[in-house]
Length: 167
Length: 122
Image 1 (cartoon, each protein chain N blue to C red):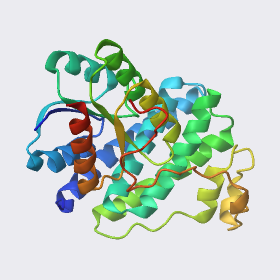
Image 2: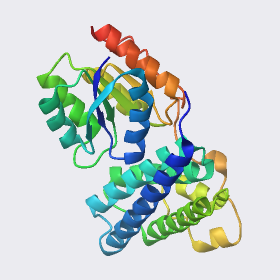
Image 3: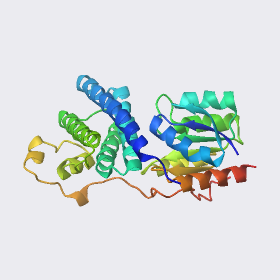
Image 4: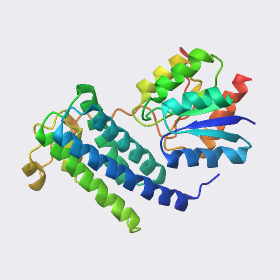
C-alpha cells in the first residue's frame, strides 16, 4: 500500500513549525537556567519527533540534523544540564539550521544539508571545543572521532526476534 | 480484526498508523498523546492491541507499557521505536511488549507485525 505523502508533508510543516517554536522557547529557558530539566526534556522530544517525521518523508537533511540534536540532548539529559555557553550556542545554531530547512520544505525546495562542521560539533561529547570560529573558518573536526548515533536497528527492520525475552 | 489504541505524541505518526491499519479492517478505538493517557485509555477501552511510542511527554511509553502489563499481563503492546533506541526497545520487550516497529514506518511491515502479534495472542 502507499500513503498520500502530500497530506503528510502538510502535517509535517504544521507540527515541525510548532516543535521549532517549542525548541526556541526551551532554549531561552536554558539560557536562564542551564539545568532546567523540563526544557532539556522538551528539546530532546521535539528533536526526536522532527527526526521521525522527516525520516518518514525522506527529508534526509532534516532527519540527520535533528538526529544529531537529539543525540546531543540525550547526553545533556543524562548529565542533567547544558554544560557551557558554547554548548547552548551550538544548540541555537542547530535550531537556526532546522528552521531554514523547514522553510525550504514549505517553499517546496529540497532542504540543504546542514554544515558538516555543525553536524560534527553536535556529535561531539561536549561542546567545550565549539567556538564560533570553528564553523566560520570551515574547519571540520575529525568525523571518525565522533561518537555518532548507534543504529543497529534498521529503518525497515520490523518484528524483532529477541528470543531470550519473547514470551 | 482488532480494536487498536494508538499512543504517540505526534499527530503525524498517529494518522500514519491509522491510515495503514484501518484498510486492513482494524478499528482505531482511541488515540493517546502521552503515557498517562495511554494507560488511562487502555483501562477505559480494553483494546486488543496498543501501538506504543517510546518517547512521549508526561510519562514515557516504557513506563506506560510496564504499568499496563503489570495490571493486564496478556495485553498486546507493540512498541514504536526510532533509530538508536534498541536499549529501550529491549527494556520494553523484557517488560512484556510483544514486538516492535521502527520509524519510519513501512506500511507492509507494520501490517505484518500487527497480524503476527494478534495471531500469537489468540
